[in-house]
Amino acid sequence: MENREKYLSFVVPCYNSESYMARCIESLLPGGEDVEIIIIDDGSKDKTVEIADAYQKQYPDLVKVIHKENGGHGSGVNAGLACARGVYFKVVDSDDWLDGTAYQKLLEKIRYYCKEAGGGEEKPDLFVCNYVYNHLEQQITRSMGYGNVFPAEKICHWSETGHFLPSQYLVMHALVYRTEILRQSGIVLPEHTFYVDNLFVYVPLPYVKNMYYLDVDFYRYYIGREDQSVNESVMIKRIDQQIKVNKIMVDSYDLWKLQDRKLRKYMFNYLEIITVVSTVMLIRSGTEENLEKKRELWNYIKQKDLRLFHHLRNGIMGGTMNLP
Image (cartoon, rainbow, N blue to C red; front, top):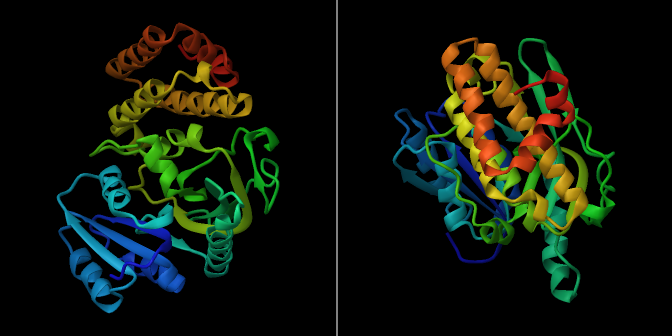
């Protein structure tokens, strides 16, 4: 793999992904030599290894493969970030893919800012794009955008952002961080843990000073599979991992000290959403053990930051459901 600067690093964590990873990787290849595609084989037991190696052999200037012991999604992202050479960084799950037209528009903007930034123009710390999900069972395709939150196609700061709707928050699929921002934030995702995408979105945000919203349907994925980590019964089964992520978020920042009012409000809301999800899943499971975990989680928040505890408890979602 040659050493010219790459504008965008894609990290594709793969675990037993033989049946769908080719579609993902094929959707990334049109970036050509401006991108690098880092395929992380996370201890796969199927043909993922051979497929990844074949791509590296065919596209040695674009594709790099890292074989590692199984450590989970977060571990794969960590490994990719450690060696990424792109000015920007994007995680693409191996069962997802990118829209070709939107991809070229984003790459055009990234190229522009990487070239112009030398002339004194600031680079965006974060690109935000739309994402599209296809619901398998209901045959619904829905695009999630941020036109009401960010001014389109210009660099903006937190003070210029609008109001996030309750169903609308920043997710991993929508974000392309400047690699340096991720490194400054010191983010290291926990291994063998689901739901770390929440940390990937949350932890770097206070380091983001400016953003650029590109109103294109960039990232695509399916929902509705029974084995997906967001399926309710699966979430209840993995509730300890959800709680772990929730607590790491609580520990990450003293949100009261964040200077920017709109950033602070957004991060409070995001933490509230995650805490509501944890709480609702613990209640829905109906077991005494999980109701005890609910009490323990709220007690953890209370001990950590009494003011935060009351803020979350009295928040719109928390208050409505009388959670604690």
